[in-house]
Figure (tube, one colour):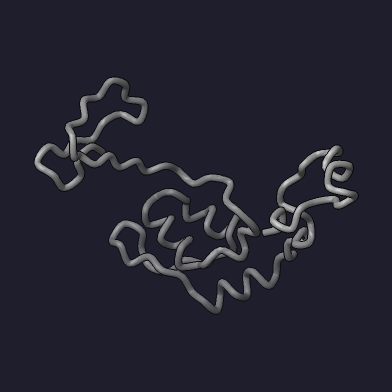
Length: 125
């Protein structure tokens, strides 16, 4: 969207090219969900419900991927989540066991260059 809320507000195609933008206009880009960071079962359930409300994540994915039990209705904006049911759902699933693994793999040469260290301290989430 170009100039959201402004006098020249307009929606443009996601792959628009050569779209004129006036000085001072804002460009708003909303993207779909990505792979994310960390264990999806640790994502704030309220944020997952918001993502479903914004249609970035499906209701089915909220349960299947994030373990969030939704309540309310998506179409009338009353969507929320059941905290107790979400906690129970998440407890039934295997906890991500890779917490101690570094997030970044610097490759086999890193240990040689880093004096034997397998990874840097900042490589852990």
